[in-house]
Image (tube, rainbow, N blue to C red):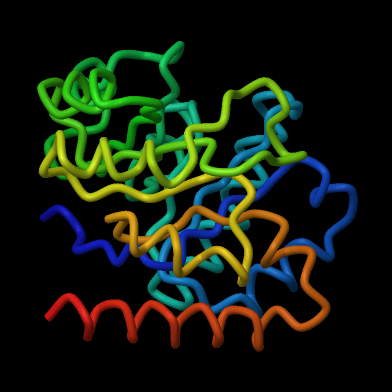
Length: 211
C-alpha cells in the first residue's frame, strides 16, 4: 500500500552535512514529516551504506524516506520512493523498478514540467528554486509566482524548494504549496527541534486557514 505522505516539513540532506557522523544525530532530532536522502558526491557503496543508516532512523520514527535520483538505492534499502530530476530516469521507468506503491517525486520548474510529471504518474512535485540558495547554485529562481502558476496547472501535491527559511516558509504555503523541502534552515539551525516546532506551527495554521 502506498504510504500517506505529509509533505509539510520535508527535510532534504546535503553532501556537506555528511563530513562526519553528527548528521545522524541531527536527523534523529529533526522530527520532520518526510526525509529525502540526497548526497551528490558519494560513491554508490557509500550511498547505500549511508542510506541504510538513514532508513533505520526513519523507520524508528515512522518517517517515510525518499532517495534522491537513485532508484536503485531506493530499491536496495526499501525506501518509500525516489525523487527524480529532469535529467534522471523517467518516472514511468522508476515506477516499473520500484512498484506501484512507490512514491515518485519529480522536480518541476514550470507548469509544463508539472503537467508532464503528472501524466507520467508522479505522486508529487518539488518546485523551485523558490529563492536563491547556496545548496544548488546551478538553478534558476521561480519565486512564489512560479509556485502559484504550478498550483493552478496541476492537481498533484507539491513542495517548494530552494532557499526556504523560517521567515519565508509561510509565503511558500500561501502560494499553494503543500509544504517545503528544506536543507540548511533545519540542518544548520542552532536548535533543530525548536526550528521544526515553529515550522509545524505555521503548517498547522496554514492548514486551518485552508479548511
